[in-house]
Length: 158
Figure 1 (cartoon, one colour):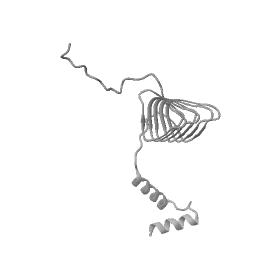
Figure 2 (cartoon, rainbow, N blue to C red):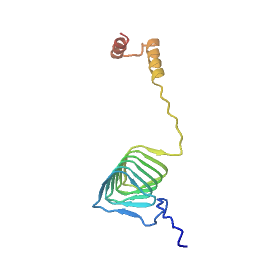
Figure 3 (cartoon, one colour):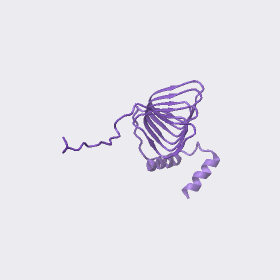
């Protein structure tokens, strides 16, 4: 009873069900990581990783946003990567959105690509074969080239 010491655990995995609120008058620079819900009404210049994120109408994020679920009412300048993305009326997103499910309300502005995360793509770098193919095409048939393009190919061969 008196001989045993209780160990104090400082485990971040314990989820607090109270949302973290960053008010309108707060500006943070750096990375924000939360295991729970974050309500952002201020500005963050940096990346955010959270379980659930709500960017309020006055909220601004300039960085990469990763979450399980995200609701955007304010401005995001950077990419969004989340399972469930809701972009509401009046929101501004300037960057790519990677999602599993997506909803966009009328009046939202998105400047970027929308990409569903379930798609798998392989990108291969093939710089040398493309150059060889182009030279082969030019050498084989240059009758379709304009006068200016013929001059350009003649200069590149010299």
